[in-house]
Amino acid sequence: MTLSIQPIDPVSRPSFAAEVSGIDITRPLTADQVAAIERGMDQFAVLVFHDQRFDDDSQIAFSRNFGELEVASGDINWGKDRRIASPHVNDISNLTNDNEVMARDDRKRLFGLGNRLWHSDSSFKAVPAKYSLLSARVIPGAGGNTEFADMRAAYDALDADTKAEVEDLVCEHSQIYSRGILGFDDFTPEDLERFKPVQQRLVRRHPVTGRKSLFLASHAGAILGWPVPEARAFLRDLNEHATQRQFVYSHAWRQWDLVIWDNRTTMHRARPFDAKQVRDMHRTTVACERSTMAEAA
Ligand code: OGA
Ligand code: MN
Image 1 (tube, rainbow, N blue to C red):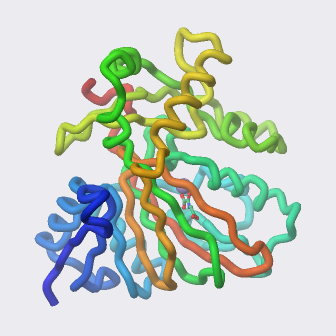
Image 2 (cartoon, rainbow, N blue to C red):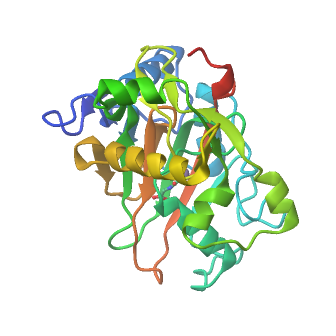
């Protein structure tokens, strides 16, 4: 098997979203293979692998090649009984702890609907996510795509005045903001403490390629020094700009796909599907090394 990384749409998105073939990533990798995947991530920001039959242990082992893993403390039921044993696996499913499809008004489901808003994983944590790795264990018959937006291309396409305006801005991110957009406010006092806003730079520079990107997410609800309504109107415009179709790859899942994305340079969102069908995805998450506030400008 020879490892090959090919852009999914070489004509309209030659440097965003590629398919990787010729490798079984459920088994231990060589340093060269890990380096090749990292180079692919630096270039394409989203990599798709087909037919990778992970369980949680093998997914965790593969993910650790790329850095320290996060714990799933952004989940609404963190600290309570969970369906998935490992604290390093985010439960991105519509299943209860008894593996039944959740009721329409299930609190965990309603909280999880926040994934339908464009976001970057864990931007609400002081040290946000580097890579997310999402494994499709069970998929619905139709719908349920995940869309990815290229925030490097979105930054490049800003006009010079806007680039100058965003350069040094700092946003506050919290899941309280993103869930508030959908009208979800069913937080316990402990949730409110855990989800206190954190600061993130709005413009980031990739440590390897040097490319700049917009660090946006539905979690961003304020800009330091700005009146809130003006900040939200401005962020709304930026999000609208950044998620124009030419910047977006829509992934139609096959069972056993593993998709890795770079949260530093992309946003993503889930698309709807028939809520009576099972969709069971398991996510591992590699943390950044430091907060964006400590990153070089
Ligand atoms: C995630 C996420 C989108 C989806 O796993 O972080 O946002 O389509 N998933 O499930
Ligand atoms: Mn996500």
